[in-house]
Length: 159
Image (cartoon, rainbow, N blue to C red; front, top):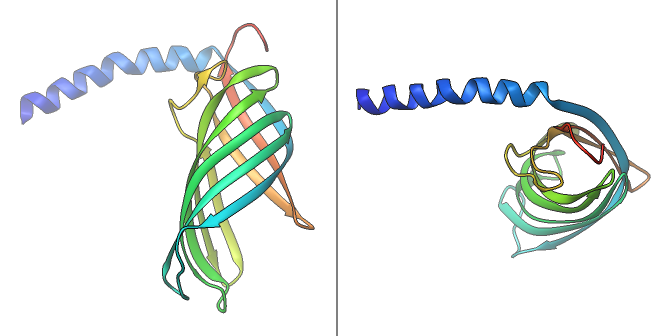
């Protein structure tokens, strides 16, 4: 067990300088736009019971493409409270780069007050979006889902 732990620490020590070098070569950007959402419940549930839904989205703006994912949640609509998690894969064009990446959502609602964190899944970028990192925020105004994606990509052509 100690040898395995020592081996893991040695491997981590080799990765840290490489990760730091990669961070130094990153350029940051902000993308904005809107998206439509379609949620298809996968079974029925009553108040306080776990829900599961298939989620698809269509994006416009600085990111143009689509997303598909799965959401799990528990909600008490009468109390305005609940929680959800969603993992989704986005595919399309972000500021001229074709590729894909994943987002992970963690949402809590307590008495109608939201607490939402949406992050790019580390290591999930592919194609022209390989190496992407960042945070995604959304603002729903009169039923329209607006997004802001603060992200970083390795420096290179197409920026």
